[in-house]
Length: 72
Image (cartoon, rainbow, N blue to C red; front, side):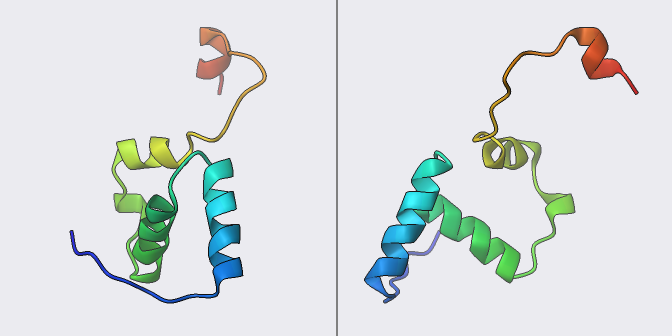
C-alpha cells in the first residue's frame, strides 16, 4: 500500500469523517472504497468479505427464520 497526502477543505473533511463514523468505518476505508470506484474496479469482482464490511452498518429490527431466508 502507498501513503499519499491530499489537501482539501476542512469542512468537507469533517463532514466526511462524520459520515464514515455513522457507517462504522474510518475515513481511510471510505476513501479507499471511493478510489476503487473511481479507478473502475467492478463490484462484481469484489471479495465477499469486502461486501460484508461495506454492509456492516445495516441493522435489522429482527432476525429472520431459516424458512424466511430460504423463501423465493
